[in-house]
Each structure stands twice: as structure tokens, then as C-alpha cells.
Image (cartoon, rainbow, N blue to C red; front, side):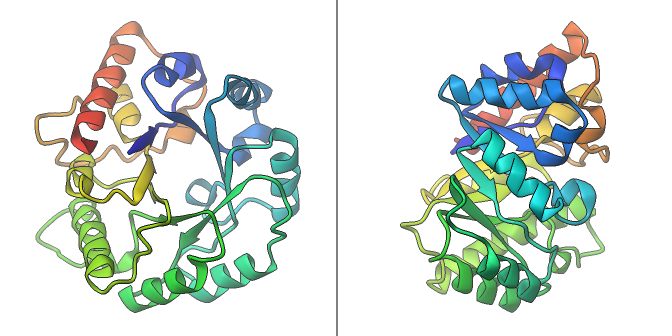
Length: 255
């Protein structure tokens, strides 16, 4: 499983040394020329770059016309077609009208408010894109009040993917991507899922920046701050070492 971890600009190079590719948030291109150039250089070095439409950070996908302009300028390996959070119909409508002649490999994110909607969305999109992605925090995951929401997100996605496999829905010949995570130990459940090709999460980075170190079983909670708000943070040597330890622990969890 290839791992991608968003991180502050100041430690981008060090994180690159222990990851399989680089994950870009498009809205930050307009805020930082230095951030954009990191991904230009990564592509010149032959690294895989995924360009995200920043929906998790903004609450809605980045402006489509501007997004296309950035895709054409950067020419990332993959880009995520604009989706709409938990809205199956709007997400599929966006996919239908997307210009597939735009260069780069396509990723589409499955959306829905229920398991059945997620299933229907997946079946509609799987043959139309190069890779299919699943989010970590669908609303129907967070229903067990005896646990915190991040535990529920973890268990929810594990159970959802298990059901999709058991029902014969997953196209195992297609590569898949997992977006984010509630708790890092989730990924220990996917060691036999060869069709899960990649995952992106800032979890080990943000945890390290907050002084949290992964234990033998991952974490019991999740730092609430989003990485993009820390993109320009100066990182001490001590925190960098902790970030790198967490990333290595994450890789071991993934197997």
C-alpha cells in the first residue's frame, strides 16, 4: 500500500524520503508559490503526485475552472474529480460532465448518506475512472455513542469495505484509494486487500506536530487540527523526529 502524508513545507523533503508519493491540496497553490513548486519538483523527480480538489479542507470542492487550470499547469499523475460531500447524485453528475480529455489519471470519490447509496455510487463510477476512492468519515459511520467518533469512523469503513467485498461489489482488478483516517490502526485490517493501492492521511504528521506518538496499537483519539492550517509551520528537530517515527509506525500498521 502506497502511503501519502501531507506535511508542512519546512519538512516536505524529509517526509518525501519515507513516503511513496506526494499529495497536493489545490487551494494551497493559490496561497503559496513555494508549495506549488514542491510538487513541480516532485514530478520532475519521477514521483507520483495526487492532486486533491480540497473538499475536506474547504467543505466544498475547489472552483472547477480554476482547478482545471491547475491540473493543466501541474500535470499531476492523478487528480480527484470534483465531488460533493455525501451527495451521490451530485457527485455522479459532476463525473458525467467532467472532460475526460484533461490529461492525467482520474480518481473519483464514492459519496452517499447510507451504505446503499455508497454502493450505488460505486457501481456507477467504477468503470469510468482510473482509481476509486473512499472517504473515512461518512455520516452513517458515527452511530455508536459508546465510542468516540474516530473509533466509529475506523470501524465504519472497515465494515463498509468488508460488506462491499462480501457482496461482490468491489472490482478487485481496479486500484482503490483510501482518503484520510479516523485512527491509524484501521489499516491493519486491509493487509489482504491487494486492491487498496494507496492511502493519504496527515494523521502521523499532525499527531507528531502535536507531540503525540503512536503506541503499539496506534492511537485512541485523533488531533482535531487539520494539516493545511499548519502548512507554514516551522518544525523543530524534536517534532520532526516524532513525525518520522509516527510515519514509520504507520507503514508497519499498513503491512
